[in-house]
Length: 195
Length: 333
Image (tube, rainbow over all chains, first blue to last red; front, side):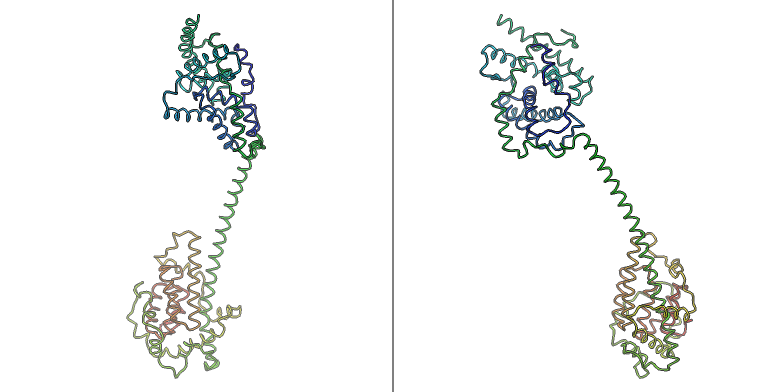
């Protein structure tokens, strides 16, 4: 999958805060559940806790939906804020329970019925990427995942995170550098191992 | 590679794309959460109420808030203005009432005197207790007063030393001739008592004007400079108006008691006024009423002493003629 594919993904186009009306929780869930789920994963929620965390995000969203002002922020930006808080909470809770679970997840792939090779590749990708993400600070990680994984533009990320665009560029550049430094090395090692 | 502006290379991009596909939510998880939310959220598929209003109505709601705020401010302003004018009106009315009250009391002795002179007797009294003083066969007032009122009630009045008095003339004011004047006062009070339930009529007011030649304008303004302890100067208009209304109520109550011959009750009310408003705006009226009560109790001596103090404190008070005449101590005008 190329970068062009990512940029053209529905997630990207739907991210610019075009929603004007506050949707019902059902509509919100239908539109944004996958985004919330991935976001929780990006922000370090362990795979075993993602389901609980996602449910918690939508419960909080339902409670606050009546106070959401579409004129001030996009629904996705608003939801991202809730997901971020929930991820922090789960991160702290997991740390208290079992610090050893904070490492890269031994992830089951999304589609158990898919090709075993694909599943292996996905498991490797999860291990590598999450190891690289774990080295980033929370602020840089947010910018990095939204730009490089979700494929959003820097202005869209700035709007989503309520940041200055230059700040987004700056954080993105540092995050890329850091991610490259850690992940490329592991990637080369694995390639060498398998090659 | 070292340039941080460089985008990620293709290997890393592919890696991230694979990762994104790998962390998609399982369909089973989505279904479980959906069912759980549907069970726990009653308005699962209905948008929240503000959602129907959208962007435009959010501005509209702000405008409504602003209009509501302005309306509240305007209402508060109008209420304040209305209240202050109402209180001012109350104050003015209270002063007018007080003025007419004491004008009536001042006028009545003259009427009584005239009637006594014309008719030559006081037989038409309706039987007020204190009016019996006027009858010639009645015992001297001192003795009767000592039996009808307790010493506390009589001596509980304001101290005489409130203002520098001259008490040297005390024996002169206690002279016997005041009995005849007492009878006229009694007659006047009797006449007053017979019609005490009716308010002052215009005819009576006209009589008051003709019977008492002394002018009565701006009594409060005249006596104000002499009352150095006047507390209402620094008070707000509203508070002083309310205080004035309460003062007036007490004074009128005392006057009603006096008119009905209940001297002890009158003195109790006057004591309450003195306790609540030690330097109230109606202090001269209180003192005048007390002097009247003392006279009615037969304590002419003390009444005349107080009348002298009154004359020293409020020499220009329109109440002064009445105060000096009430026991007709010979020092009256």
